[in-house]
Length: 111
Length: 317
Image (cartoon, rainbow over all chains, first blue to last red; front, top):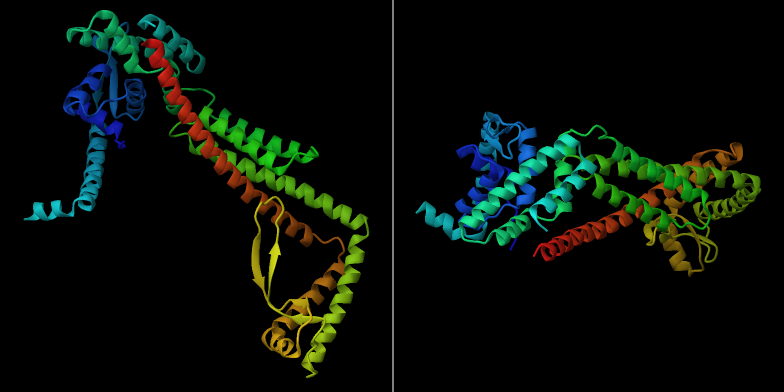
Protein backbone atom coordinates (compact mmCIF):
# COMPACT_ATOMS: atom_id res chain seq x y z
CA UNK A 1 0.00 0.00 0.00
CA UNK A 2 1.30 3.44 -0.89
CA UNK A 3 0.59 6.29 1.53
CA UNK A 4 1.01 9.95 0.85
CA UNK A 5 3.37 11.69 3.25
CA UNK A 6 4.34 15.33 3.69
CA UNK A 7 7.92 15.44 2.43
CA UNK A 8 8.36 19.11 3.30
CA UNK A 9 7.31 18.50 6.92
CA UNK A 10 9.65 15.50 7.17
CA UNK A 11 12.62 17.49 5.87
CA UNK A 12 11.77 20.42 8.18
CA UNK A 13 11.58 18.02 11.14
CA UNK A 14 15.04 16.65 10.35
CA UNK A 15 16.48 20.15 9.99
CA UNK A 16 14.77 21.27 13.21
CA UNK A 17 17.18 19.00 15.09
CA UNK A 18 20.30 20.35 13.48
CA UNK A 19 21.48 21.91 10.23
CA UNK A 20 22.37 19.30 7.62
CA UNK A 21 23.35 18.79 3.99
CA UNK A 22 21.18 16.88 1.53
CA UNK A 23 22.65 13.43 1.95
CA UNK A 24 22.52 13.76 5.77
CA UNK A 25 18.78 14.50 5.49
CA UNK A 26 18.24 11.34 3.41
CA UNK A 27 20.24 9.28 5.91
CA UNK A 28 18.42 10.74 8.92
CA UNK A 29 14.99 10.01 7.45
CA UNK A 30 16.00 6.40 6.79
CA UNK A 31 17.48 5.91 10.26
CA UNK A 32 14.74 7.66 12.23
CA UNK A 33 11.98 5.74 10.45
CA UNK A 34 13.75 2.44 11.06
CA UNK A 35 14.29 2.07 7.32
CA UNK A 36 10.54 2.25 6.59
CA UNK A 37 10.64 5.67 4.96
CA UNK A 38 13.01 6.50 2.12
CA UNK A 39 13.18 9.89 0.55
CA UNK A 40 13.54 9.87 -3.19
CA UNK A 41 17.02 11.36 -3.43
CA UNK A 42 16.42 12.93 -6.83
CA UNK A 43 13.36 14.73 -5.48
CA UNK A 44 15.00 15.88 -2.25
CA UNK A 45 16.82 18.85 -3.74
CA UNK A 46 13.76 20.41 -5.39
CA UNK A 47 12.07 20.13 -1.98
CA UNK A 48 15.04 21.77 -0.24
CA UNK A 49 15.07 24.57 -2.85
CA UNK A 50 11.33 25.07 -2.35
CA UNK A 51 11.84 25.33 1.41
CA UNK A 52 14.61 27.83 0.82
CA UNK A 53 12.40 29.87 -1.53
CA UNK A 54 9.67 29.92 1.11
CA UNK A 55 12.28 31.13 3.60
CA UNK A 56 11.63 28.19 5.88
CA UNK A 57 15.29 27.16 5.63
CA UNK A 58 18.50 28.95 4.82
CA UNK A 59 21.28 27.43 2.74
CA UNK A 60 25.00 28.16 2.93
CA UNK A 61 27.91 26.47 1.22
CA UNK A 62 29.87 24.47 3.79
CA UNK A 63 32.40 26.60 5.70
CA UNK A 64 31.34 29.56 3.58
CA UNK A 65 33.43 28.17 0.75
CA UNK A 66 31.70 28.83 -2.61
CA UNK A 67 33.76 26.00 -4.15
CA UNK A 68 32.40 23.48 -1.64
CA UNK A 69 30.24 20.60 -2.86
CA UNK A 70 27.94 20.72 0.15
CA UNK A 71 25.25 23.17 1.04
CA UNK A 72 24.18 23.21 4.67
CA UNK A 73 20.50 23.78 5.26
CA UNK A 74 19.23 25.27 8.54
CA UNK A 75 15.65 25.83 9.63
CA UNK A 76 14.44 29.38 10.25
CA UNK A 77 11.84 30.64 12.76
CA UNK A 78 9.26 30.74 9.99
CA UNK A 79 10.22 27.15 9.17
CA UNK A 80 9.67 26.09 12.78
CA UNK A 81 6.24 27.74 12.80
CA UNK A 82 5.38 25.97 9.54
CA UNK A 83 6.59 22.66 10.97
CA UNK A 84 4.44 23.13 14.09
CA UNK A 85 1.42 23.86 11.89
CA UNK A 86 2.01 20.88 9.64
CA UNK A 87 2.65 18.61 12.63
CA UNK A 88 -0.66 19.64 14.18
CA UNK A 89 -2.55 19.08 10.95
CA UNK A 90 -0.93 15.70 10.44
CA UNK A 91 -1.63 14.65 14.07
CA UNK A 92 -5.29 15.66 13.77
CA UNK A 93 -5.61 13.80 10.48
CA UNK A 94 -3.86 10.67 11.82
CA UNK A 95 -6.00 10.70 14.98
CA UNK A 96 -9.19 10.96 12.90
CA UNK A 97 -8.17 8.06 10.65
CA UNK A 98 -7.18 5.97 13.66
CA UNK A 99 -10.57 6.63 15.25
CA UNK A 100 -12.25 5.45 12.07
CA UNK A 101 -10.09 2.38 11.54
CA UNK A 102 -9.86 1.30 15.17
CA UNK A 103 -12.81 2.62 17.19
CA UNK A 104 -11.74 0.35 20.06
CA UNK A 105 -8.38 2.15 20.31
CA UNK A 106 -10.17 5.37 21.36
CA UNK A 107 -12.10 3.50 24.05
CA UNK A 108 -8.91 1.81 25.27
CA UNK A 109 -7.12 5.15 25.45
CA UNK A 110 -9.99 6.72 27.47
CA UNK A 111 -10.15 3.83 29.97
CA UNK B 1 27.45 4.95 -16.37
CA UNK B 2 29.75 6.48 -13.77
CA UNK B 3 29.25 9.60 -11.66
CA UNK B 4 31.06 11.89 -14.10
CA UNK B 5 28.93 10.74 -17.06
CA UNK B 6 25.76 11.01 -14.99
CA UNK B 7 26.55 14.55 -13.85
CA UNK B 8 27.59 15.55 -17.36
CA UNK B 9 24.24 14.42 -18.79
CA UNK B 10 22.44 16.16 -15.95
CA UNK B 11 24.34 19.38 -16.64
CA UNK B 12 23.35 19.26 -20.32
CA UNK B 13 19.66 18.79 -19.41
CA UNK B 14 19.70 21.50 -16.76
CA UNK B 15 21.53 24.03 -18.90
CA UNK B 16 18.80 23.69 -21.53
CA UNK B 17 16.05 24.48 -19.02
CA UNK B 18 17.61 26.73 -16.40
CA UNK B 19 20.34 29.31 -16.01
CA UNK B 20 24.02 28.41 -16.15
CA UNK B 21 24.51 29.48 -12.53
CA UNK B 22 21.61 27.43 -11.20
CA UNK B 23 22.72 24.36 -13.18
CA UNK B 24 26.27 24.74 -11.94
CA UNK B 25 25.20 24.98 -8.28
CA UNK B 26 22.91 21.96 -8.63
CA UNK B 27 25.62 19.86 -10.25
CA UNK B 28 28.13 20.77 -7.56
CA UNK B 29 25.69 19.89 -4.81
CA UNK B 30 24.66 16.61 -6.47
CA UNK B 31 28.31 15.72 -6.97
CA UNK B 32 28.79 16.18 -3.21
CA UNK B 33 25.68 14.04 -2.65
CA UNK B 34 27.03 11.21 -4.84
CA UNK B 35 30.40 11.33 -3.07
CA UNK B 36 28.74 11.18 0.36
CA UNK B 37 26.42 8.39 -0.70
CA UNK B 38 29.31 6.39 -2.20
CA UNK B 39 31.50 6.89 0.88
CA UNK B 40 28.68 5.72 3.19
CA UNK B 41 28.26 2.54 1.15
CA UNK B 42 31.99 1.86 1.07
CA UNK B 43 32.02 2.15 4.85
CA UNK B 44 29.41 -0.60 4.92
CA UNK B 45 31.77 -2.83 2.94
CA UNK B 46 30.56 -2.38 -0.64
CA UNK B 47 33.25 -2.26 -3.30
CA UNK B 48 33.79 1.21 -4.85
CA UNK B 49 32.25 0.33 -8.23
CA UNK B 50 29.11 -1.14 -6.70
CA UNK B 51 28.89 1.76 -4.22
CA UNK B 52 29.03 4.28 -7.06
CA UNK B 53 26.45 2.38 -9.09
CA UNK B 54 24.03 2.25 -6.16
CA UNK B 55 24.56 5.93 -5.37
CA UNK B 56 23.61 6.85 -8.97
CA UNK B 57 20.62 4.51 -8.92
CA UNK B 58 19.31 6.14 -5.73
CA UNK B 59 19.48 9.57 -7.31
CA UNK B 60 17.27 8.49 -10.23
CA UNK B 61 17.03 8.95 -14.00
CA UNK B 62 18.77 12.05 -15.35
CA UNK B 63 15.75 13.40 -17.19
CA UNK B 64 13.41 13.09 -14.21
CA UNK B 65 15.90 14.68 -11.80
CA UNK B 66 16.50 17.52 -14.28
CA UNK B 67 12.76 17.96 -14.82
CA UNK B 68 12.02 18.26 -11.09
CA UNK B 69 14.87 20.71 -10.58
CA UNK B 70 13.77 22.79 -13.57
CA UNK B 71 10.21 22.90 -12.28
CA UNK B 72 11.44 24.11 -8.93
CA UNK B 73 13.58 26.69 -10.72
CA UNK B 74 10.52 28.01 -12.54
CA UNK B 75 8.42 27.81 -9.38
CA UNK B 76 10.69 30.12 -7.48
CA UNK B 77 10.44 32.70 -10.25
CA UNK B 78 14.08 32.53 -11.22
CA UNK B 79 13.11 32.15 -14.86
CA UNK B 80 12.61 35.34 -16.82
CA UNK B 81 9.80 34.22 -19.14
CA UNK B 82 7.25 32.73 -16.75
CA UNK B 83 4.14 33.92 -18.58
CA UNK B 84 5.12 32.59 -21.98
CA UNK B 85 3.71 29.08 -21.48
CA UNK B 86 0.11 29.95 -20.71
CA UNK B 87 0.02 32.69 -23.34
CA UNK B 88 1.35 30.32 -25.97
CA UNK B 89 -1.23 27.72 -25.05
CA UNK B 90 -4.02 30.27 -25.20
CA UNK B 91 -2.84 31.44 -28.62
CA UNK B 92 -2.51 27.93 -30.00
CA UNK B 93 -5.97 26.87 -28.91
CA UNK B 94 -7.58 30.05 -30.12
CA UNK B 95 -5.82 29.84 -33.48
CA UNK B 96 -6.75 26.21 -33.86
CA UNK B 97 -10.43 26.98 -33.21
CA UNK B 98 -10.45 29.61 -35.93
CA UNK B 99 -8.51 27.46 -38.40
CA UNK B 100 -10.83 24.50 -37.83
CA UNK B 101 -13.83 26.74 -38.51
CA UNK B 102 -12.36 27.90 -41.79
CA UNK B 103 -11.35 24.39 -42.87
CA UNK B 104 -14.21 22.39 -44.38
CA UNK B 105 -14.42 18.76 -43.36
CA UNK B 106 -12.63 19.19 -40.06
CA UNK B 107 -14.93 17.72 -37.45
CA UNK B 108 -15.59 19.19 -34.04
CA UNK B 109 -14.22 15.97 -32.56
CA UNK B 110 -10.88 16.61 -34.25
CA UNK B 111 -10.95 20.20 -33.06
CA UNK B 112 -11.73 19.30 -29.47
CA UNK B 113 -9.23 16.43 -29.45
CA UNK B 114 -6.50 18.63 -30.83
CA UNK B 115 -7.25 21.32 -28.26
CA UNK B 116 -7.01 18.66 -25.58
CA UNK B 117 -3.68 17.41 -26.94
CA UNK B 118 -2.28 20.94 -26.96
CA UNK B 119 -3.57 21.40 -23.42
CA UNK B 120 -2.10 18.11 -22.22
CA UNK B 121 1.29 18.81 -23.77
CA UNK B 122 1.21 22.30 -22.32
CA UNK B 123 0.29 20.90 -18.97
CA UNK B 124 3.19 18.47 -19.09
CA UNK B 125 5.62 21.08 -20.29
CA UNK B 126 4.68 23.89 -17.96
CA UNK B 127 3.23 22.03 -15.01
CA UNK B 128 4.58 22.90 -11.60
CA UNK B 129 2.76 22.80 -8.32
CA UNK B 130 2.28 26.51 -7.98
CA UNK B 131 1.92 27.04 -11.70
CA UNK B 132 -0.58 24.36 -12.46
CA UNK B 133 -3.53 26.68 -12.06
CA UNK B 134 -2.35 29.24 -14.64
CA UNK B 135 -1.96 26.98 -17.67
CA UNK B 136 -5.22 25.25 -16.84
CA UNK B 137 -7.09 28.49 -16.47
CA UNK B 138 -5.68 29.96 -19.66
CA UNK B 139 -6.41 26.74 -21.48
CA UNK B 140 -10.05 26.67 -20.37
CA UNK B 141 -10.54 30.36 -21.05
CA UNK B 142 -8.89 29.91 -24.45
CA UNK B 143 -11.17 27.01 -25.29
CA UNK B 144 -14.30 28.88 -24.22
CA UNK B 145 -13.37 31.98 -26.21
CA UNK B 146 -12.48 29.90 -29.26
CA UNK B 147 -15.74 27.97 -29.14
CA UNK B 148 -17.83 31.09 -28.66
CA UNK B 149 -15.99 32.94 -31.40
CA UNK B 150 -16.47 30.07 -33.84
CA UNK B 151 -20.13 29.77 -32.87
CA UNK B 152 -20.69 33.50 -33.33
CA UNK B 153 -19.21 33.44 -36.82
CA UNK B 154 -21.23 30.35 -37.71
CA UNK B 155 -24.43 31.87 -36.38
CA UNK B 156 -23.98 35.16 -38.18
CA UNK B 157 -23.18 33.37 -41.42
CA UNK B 158 -26.23 31.12 -41.05
CA UNK B 159 -28.44 34.08 -40.27
CA UNK B 160 -27.20 35.93 -43.35
CA UNK B 161 -27.76 32.89 -45.57
CA UNK B 162 -31.19 32.41 -43.99
CA UNK B 163 -32.29 35.93 -44.82
CA UNK B 164 -30.76 35.90 -48.28
CA UNK B 165 -32.45 32.68 -49.33
CA UNK B 166 -35.97 33.91 -48.55
CA UNK B 167 -36.31 30.98 -46.20
CA UNK B 168 -37.32 33.28 -43.38
CA UNK B 169 -40.31 34.66 -45.29
CA UNK B 170 -41.43 31.13 -46.15
CA UNK B 171 -41.16 30.06 -42.49
CA UNK B 172 -43.12 33.11 -41.34
CA UNK B 173 -45.92 32.16 -43.76
CA UNK B 174 -45.93 28.60 -42.43
CA UNK B 175 -46.03 29.86 -38.86
CA UNK B 176 -48.98 32.12 -39.70
CA UNK B 177 -50.96 29.19 -41.14
CA UNK B 178 -50.19 26.96 -38.14
CA UNK B 179 -51.02 29.76 -35.74
CA UNK B 180 -54.36 30.47 -37.42
CA UNK B 181 -55.23 26.78 -37.19
CA UNK B 182 -54.29 26.58 -33.48
CA UNK B 183 -56.08 29.86 -32.74
CA UNK B 184 -59.27 28.46 -34.30
CA UNK B 185 -58.98 25.25 -32.26
CA UNK B 186 -58.46 27.28 -29.09
CA UNK B 187 -61.43 29.56 -29.83
CA UNK B 188 -63.64 26.54 -30.45
CA UNK B 189 -62.63 25.04 -27.13
CA UNK B 190 -63.14 28.31 -25.28
CA UNK B 191 -66.67 28.60 -26.76
CA UNK B 192 -67.52 25.12 -25.48
CA UNK B 193 -67.46 23.29 -28.79
CA UNK B 194 -66.71 19.55 -28.67
CA UNK B 195 -62.95 18.98 -28.85
CA UNK B 196 -61.43 18.06 -32.16
CA UNK B 197 -60.40 14.45 -32.45
CA UNK B 198 -58.07 15.26 -35.29
CA UNK B 199 -55.81 18.24 -35.69
CA UNK B 200 -54.16 20.41 -33.03
CA UNK B 201 -54.52 19.22 -29.44
CA UNK B 202 -52.61 20.50 -26.43
CA UNK B 203 -50.82 17.44 -25.16
CA UNK B 204 -47.79 17.01 -22.95
CA UNK B 205 -45.01 15.45 -24.91
CA UNK B 206 -41.34 14.80 -24.66
CA UNK B 207 -39.35 16.90 -27.01
CA UNK B 208 -36.05 15.40 -28.02
CA UNK B 209 -33.53 17.85 -29.24
CA UNK B 210 -30.22 16.66 -30.58
CA UNK B 211 -27.87 19.49 -29.90
CA UNK B 212 -25.16 19.91 -32.50
CA UNK B 213 -21.77 18.38 -31.73
CA UNK B 214 -23.04 16.42 -28.77
CA UNK B 215 -23.02 12.67 -29.14
CA UNK B 216 -25.91 12.20 -26.80
CA UNK B 217 -29.37 13.73 -26.63
CA UNK B 218 -30.83 16.08 -24.11
CA UNK B 219 -34.53 15.84 -23.61
CA UNK B 220 -37.07 17.68 -21.59
CA UNK B 221 -40.80 17.56 -21.15
CA UNK B 222 -42.88 20.44 -22.44
CA UNK B 223 -46.58 20.87 -21.98
CA UNK B 224 -49.32 22.85 -23.65
CA UNK B 225 -47.63 22.79 -27.04
CA UNK B 226 -49.86 21.79 -29.94
CA UNK B 227 -49.57 18.31 -31.30
CA UNK B 228 -51.22 17.14 -34.49
CA UNK B 229 -52.51 13.82 -33.36
CA UNK B 230 -55.64 11.80 -33.91
CA UNK B 231 -57.28 10.80 -30.67
CA UNK B 232 -60.69 9.75 -29.38
CA UNK B 233 -63.11 12.37 -28.04
CA UNK B 234 -62.54 11.44 -24.38
CA UNK B 235 -58.76 11.69 -24.62
CA UNK B 236 -59.02 14.95 -26.57
CA UNK B 237 -61.32 16.46 -23.91
CA UNK B 238 -58.95 15.44 -21.13
CA UNK B 239 -56.02 16.92 -23.01
CA UNK B 240 -57.81 20.22 -23.43
CA UNK B 241 -58.87 20.31 -19.79
CA UNK B 242 -55.42 19.52 -18.55
CA UNK B 243 -53.30 21.60 -20.91
CA UNK B 244 -55.76 24.05 -22.46
CA UNK B 245 -54.66 27.04 -20.36
CA UNK B 246 -50.99 26.40 -21.16
CA UNK B 247 -51.92 26.00 -24.82
CA UNK B 248 -53.63 29.40 -24.76
CA UNK B 249 -50.48 30.92 -23.25
CA UNK B 250 -48.33 29.21 -25.88
CA UNK B 251 -50.53 30.56 -28.70
CA UNK B 252 -50.24 34.06 -27.24
CA UNK B 253 -46.47 33.77 -27.02
CA UNK B 254 -46.25 32.54 -30.60
CA UNK B 255 -48.40 35.43 -31.81
CA UNK B 256 -46.05 37.91 -30.15
CA UNK B 257 -42.99 36.15 -31.53
CA UNK B 258 -44.42 36.11 -35.04
CA UNK B 259 -45.28 39.81 -34.81
CA UNK B 260 -41.67 40.52 -33.76
CA UNK B 261 -40.27 38.45 -36.62
CA UNK B 262 -42.45 40.28 -39.15
CA UNK B 263 -41.58 43.76 -37.86
CA UNK B 264 -37.85 43.00 -37.37
CA UNK B 265 -36.92 40.30 -39.88
CA UNK B 266 -33.22 40.52 -39.09
CA UNK B 267 -33.46 40.52 -35.32
CA UNK B 268 -30.59 39.03 -33.38
CA UNK B 269 -32.62 36.95 -30.92
CA UNK B 270 -32.55 33.77 -33.04
CA UNK B 271 -28.86 34.34 -33.71
CA UNK B 272 -28.17 34.73 -30.02
CA UNK B 273 -30.17 31.61 -29.25
CA UNK B 274 -28.26 29.72 -31.90
CA UNK B 275 -25.01 31.04 -30.50
CA UNK B 276 -25.81 29.98 -26.97
CA UNK B 277 -26.98 26.59 -28.15
CA UNK B 278 -23.97 25.91 -30.32
CA UNK B 279 -21.48 27.40 -27.90
CA UNK B 280 -22.95 25.59 -24.92
CA UNK B 281 -23.16 22.20 -26.53
CA UNK B 282 -19.71 22.51 -28.08
CA UNK B 283 -18.33 23.45 -24.71
CA UNK B 284 -19.92 20.46 -23.00
CA UNK B 285 -18.49 18.22 -25.66
CA UNK B 286 -15.11 19.91 -25.51
CA UNK B 287 -14.86 19.52 -21.76
CA UNK B 288 -15.90 15.88 -21.95
CA UNK B 289 -13.26 15.14 -24.56
CA UNK B 290 -10.69 17.20 -22.68
CA UNK B 291 -11.37 15.30 -19.46
CA UNK B 292 -11.00 11.97 -21.24
CA UNK B 293 -7.82 13.04 -23.04
CA UNK B 294 -6.35 14.44 -19.85
CA UNK B 295 -6.89 11.21 -18.03
CA UNK B 296 -5.34 9.31 -20.92
CA UNK B 297 -2.34 11.61 -21.18
CA UNK B 298 -1.66 11.77 -17.45
CA UNK B 299 -1.76 7.96 -17.30
CA UNK B 300 0.56 7.80 -20.29
CA UNK B 301 3.00 10.32 -18.77
CA UNK B 302 3.06 8.42 -15.50
CA UNK B 303 3.72 5.19 -17.42
CA UNK B 304 6.53 6.85 -19.38
CA UNK B 305 8.16 8.00 -16.13
CA UNK B 306 8.04 4.45 -14.78
CA UNK B 307 9.50 3.09 -18.01
CA UNK B 308 12.29 5.63 -17.76
CA UNK B 309 13.13 4.51 -14.22
CA UNK B 310 13.22 0.87 -15.36
CA UNK B 311 15.41 1.75 -18.36
CA UNK B 312 17.73 3.78 -16.14
CA UNK B 313 18.09 0.89 -13.69
CA UNK B 314 18.97 -1.44 -16.56
CA UNK B 315 21.43 1.07 -17.99
CA UNK B 316 23.22 1.64 -14.68
CA UNK B 317 22.95 -1.90 -13.40
